[in-house]
Structures are given as C-alpha cells and as structure tokens.
Amino acid sequence: MRQDLDVRLLDPDPSTAADRARLLAPQLKALSDANRLHLVLLLAEGSRSVRELTELSGMSQTLVSHHLTPLREQGLVTVTPRGRSNVYALCCEALAGPVKLLATLASLTPEGADACCSD
Image 1: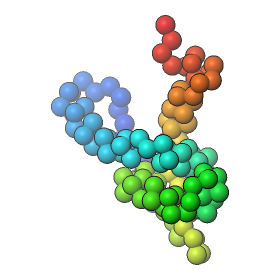
Image 2: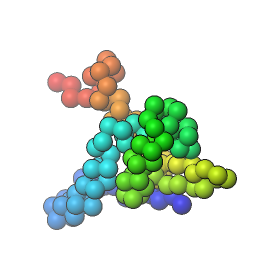
Image 3: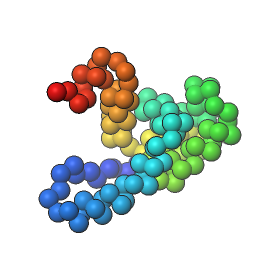
Image 4: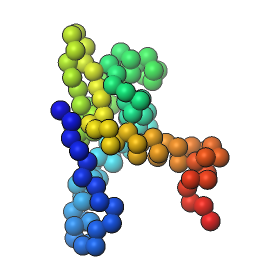
C-alpha cells in the first residue's frame, strides 16, 4: 500500500497553510528522533527487514521495532509480511528524495554547506 504526498510549498491562503501545518506536525515529530531518522535514511536506500535494519543501524531488534512503530502509525513507512519476517519501506518514493536532501544539508560536508543558507 503506497500513498502519494500532497505537498504545496506556497499556498496563498494562511488558513490552509495552518491546517497543513497541523496535519504535518505529527509526521515531523515522528522524524525528529535521531534513531527514527536513521531508520528512514536506511529505508530511503530501499526496503529492508527488521533484521537488516538491526544489522545496519547497530540498534537492537527491540529498539528498531520500537522506533518503527511511530513511523508506521504516521504513515511514513509501510510493512509487508514476507515469510516469517516483515519488510519495511518508505510510504512512497517521493519521501526518499527530501529525506536524503535533508541529510545532505545537515551534514558538515562542503556540499551541504554550499547547498544551504549561502550568503
């Protein structure tokens, strides 16, 4: 089950922007945890099982599952049963690009510094 993100960055109607902000805040809150964001960055590279996420992140299986729950509840990741395990994926391909861009902008690389807040 995939869903498209309906995002308009500039909306002339302030009440509409306020409504969108109220709807977006819980999703951004789910992304605000460093462990959750780490998992989302891993999923931006492709679908993964909990076992793969555990190995790649260095987190315990319990912690990975704990952090996937709010991401799933907010519709940011989907889960597909596959045999005896579950495979997680980003809700849609449209989310991978912005997540990767934010990671680049936040990094302390010359590319990140050049891409963000230039005078």
